[in-house]
Amino acid sequence: MVPIPGFPPSLVDLDDSVTFESRVEEAEQISDASHESSPAELASERKTHPQVWEGSKITKSFSDKKTSSPVLDHLDISIHSGEIVGLAGPSGSGKTTLARIMCGLLNADEETVTCGGEEIRNITSVIGGRRQARGKINMFFQSPRKACNPRFNFRHIIEETSHGMTAEEAATEVQLTPDLLDRRPSQVSDGQLQRAILARVLASEPDFVVCDEVTAMLDPGTAAHTMTMLTSWAREGGTGILIISHSPELLRTCCDRQIHIESLALSRG
Image (cartoon, rainbow, N blue to C red; front, side):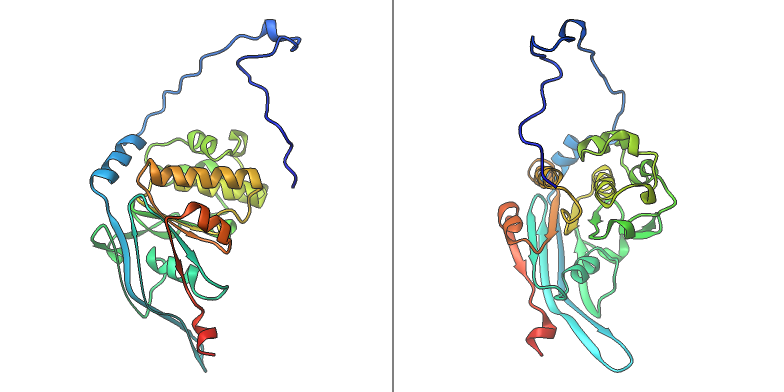
């Protein structure tokens, strides 16, 4: 996909060469939507009372009837409020497995995972058919079609875990056109669905976010906007973010620090 060069014209200050300029009047648009807790209030709370999301001695193997394949071996990880941490490593090294354990979506063979001092297993519940840490952590999955219930439209998917933000507000933030809110996942492209999932994460206003290959399904313009928005969540909102990516440039540009996981299968093979 090749973006169109240049910038769109201003819709407020029209050039005299526009034939209908004299017939256009500026209309003031005021939203009556309100939040249970405003983003500014949440950001202030996170900065005043910063939290740590950490895992200790995380160990995981996958077994079949004949063999056991180690993936993670006594790995430690921590993410602080307002921090962006990159997670890198070759395919099959356990990056997504680690993220799912940290979110309470997958049990490890051995681990201690806490968020804000609470054990992750004590703050997880099933929401929309998926287990997640209530109000604490949300995960942006690599495959958007596995991340939502195909029976629901975008409006329901976004507002299901919202803390007061409307579907329209969240959609606007991620450049998802409002006319798509009444469509179901099967009626849209992967890129449009990826934006809807990002809008759901935004509306849930979590303390920590995991982004697993967050730009994989997005065009370059939307990908850049998404990374700018995630950076804003951390810098201005105090959200802690874990970014999983195969792109060294993306991690180098956006992250405060990086964690590199080696493949145990390769290192022991």
